[in-house]
Image (cartoon, rainbow, N blue to C red; front, side, top):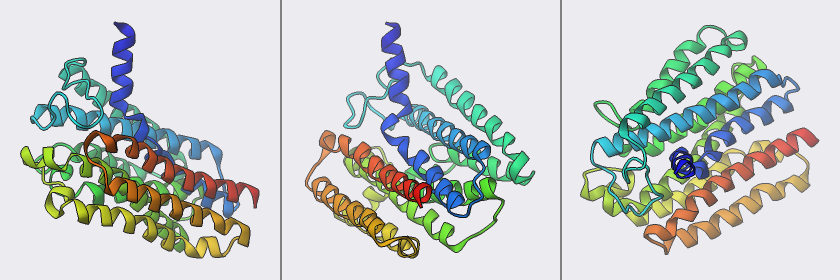
Length: 294
């Protein structure tokens, strides 16, 4: 019984999507290393903060979707412990705010390197964790989930992480890379909402997939990947020619995954959540490897 409970909590963390938060921080690390201003203490704390914040967001999403009747037993997506009765709603709510509190404590420690204004940034991030699934106008239910991902899993972790690690407020290349990272992260949510389009429409959840339909979302998935690589072209062009194979390989794999997603429905799409997240992580790891080896 104890092992089953542990498994339910691990499922609630949605491990297959956690590479999204890790990738953004690794991109920030890559640029910090390339500027020769890498500071490992704040770098590691940024990584811990990002992972805790995403887990808190995943917990909040599970709790609030259950509370509002948006998740049903036997859903097409990965199993939800609260919906299936394995985790009590109160336990999930407590876990949500405990994990968010832990993330805030880690974030406060970054004030040492980034200054007191980071508290404001931390408040915005904490509000975003909850506002994605709750509040008077939940972002995930009004077609803004993908936009939120670009902001909270791309722009913020890359730009803010780079600043905290290096002390440099802005570089154009970092700004472009942050949007590219966000677009890759948004693709993970696109797969999720593509799979759940019919179920979401039935409960009044107005995701982008519900608003614009499956063909449009499949096309957006493909475009996001190509846009992400295009935004990083100046970075890759400044590196030795052999490493150009990295974005080329990413685009080939991304295109193959797109074709597979476009002809699948329901539970058959579940593996592609993790595959899309791992493509994003692989791209970030490759960039980090190039930065370390240059």
